[in-house]
Image 1: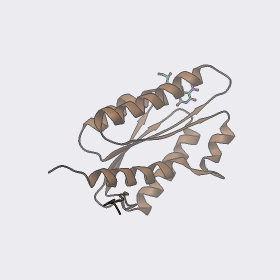
Image 2: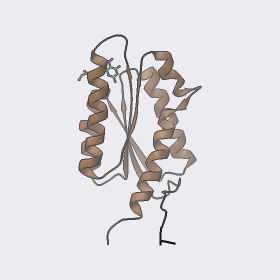
Image 3: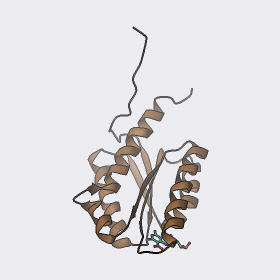
Length: 157
Ligand code: INI
């Protein structure tokens, strides 16, 4: 039998510092994502968290990059709601938000969680912002805690 070891970050927020970037666009939805995220912060005992509001999801990556590079946060949680409403604008905003957030994570090594809803309708978004399909903000904080703790296991020195 090989010497395999399994690693998984625990759902324990003790000692973690999180940044939450949240988009003002569609704030009737993103406000609920933030509420869910802050419930998870409380539930798992996250040491500290700061909230940063940006105008729209397109602006999330540039702010996430500054926060991830600051050395102050173990993870950056990005919250937004991009609703299709039959316009091509959706594709650009949703695509660039996703691509930008992932790029920040890979460039900085700081996990950046994708809590940006990309939906056809407000109803679909509300279902995922504390409705019948849960709360993506809550789930993003859970993922942030697990990944941050996993990475802490490999801290150098
Ligand atoms: N921003 C969103 O977060 N969600 C949207 O649904 C949206 N739509 O549909 O336009 C949106 N647009 C604004 C965009 O994020 C920027 O703030 C704007 O383009 C200025 O750069």
